[in-house]
Length: 173
Image (cartoon, rainbow, N blue to C red; front, side, top):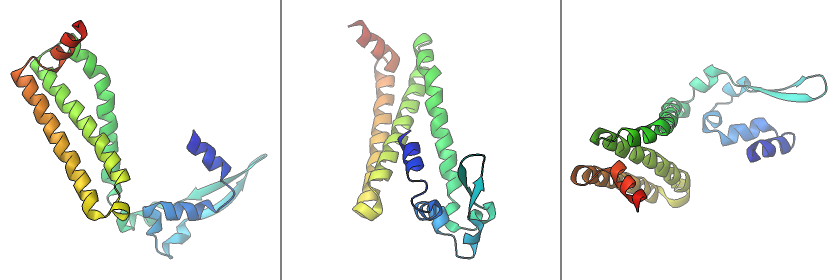
């Protein structure tokens, strides 16, 4: 909501096409020849004027920095799918407790937490800000924490009562 209010407030102050080009690495990589695909037109409506931006798919496809964007989109979709799958998975694990459900919960929780932590580290430990070595160390630390967590949950499931039964025992206290 705040982003929408900021966009509405700053809509006419600075040319949005310049801000969009600078802020988006895919658009910033456009050559001067391809920038003509960006059109900044005012389309009149009945009472208000609306700015319309058009970006040619061909122009974006020609940039080298956008080739990996499909991978991030696919990963984002998988992350959201896992988050959505956790909604019925957690109650199902309590209704049908088994070792398989415990291992499935362990993998799902660890993967969900890993992607969340990795996003935080990538967002806040940018190589331009902290240096490439510290940024890579942060990501490596996230992978180490995730591997240790998954190993610990697998060990707990194998050698003890399992995740679901442990939570049920905790609730009985």
